[in-house]
Length: 113
Length: 116
Image (cartoon, rainbow over all chains, first blue to last red; front, side):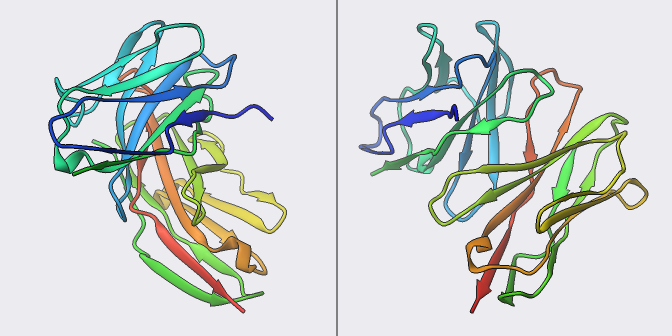
């Protein structure tokens, strides 16, 4: 069964460093998303992406964040200068249509020291 | 703005008991979608069900059932004859159509512990 994959599973970085989190959505899906979950808290929407552009972003998704679909298969989230409060589990998701269910990847745990 | 409330932070049951997880949502939109996701200890988010606002039929899938009541803005989830493998955090989520981004708004989750 097709699934969303994410790499790495765990990333440790120093405050102020740039990180890139990678996702491979399900191959025939057209809508892509990033969410994050701070430990023990609820899942929060960051950004949605369709047709090579951002369709919606949350207040969390400030200028330090960017997304890209560099080729036909990958979808990346970049954090330019990480802060301690960026430590969280980051989930990528994809859906075949805008109204379809979103399928989530296993997540990347980001730890900022 | 939309909001999802899961008032039960944690529920503990003994195996084979039935358990209901509550979800109350708020939105001004008349068209919306409701979801349940399961997050087992391994951390991934597993899709369970999607419901649109025009379909108030209850749904049953094996030991799982969902009760959608528009009048009370609730979308409750019942597990019948619970099993240890059901132990997880369960999230209810809402998606409205305005905004264009199809974002999911999640509740805070209910931690379900099923013990022997």
